[in-house]
Image (cartoon, rainbow, N blue to C red; front, side, top):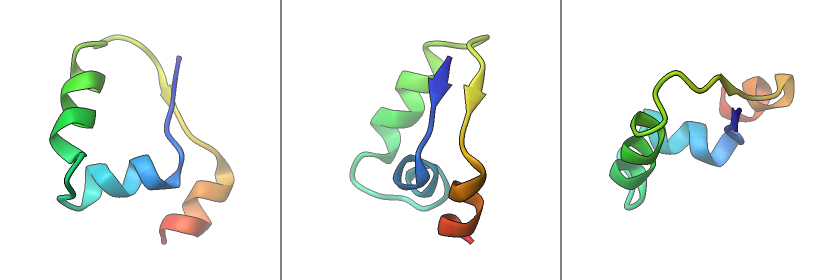
Length: 45
């Protein structure tokens, strides 16, 4: 299971220095469930 906190979610939504590396890391684990918290919705929006 991959847990994404709000900072990781933002890196996937907006281009940041670590965005490409995070995207590659997640892509290399295709099929692994990706989860976050209800709190992340509030923090990101």
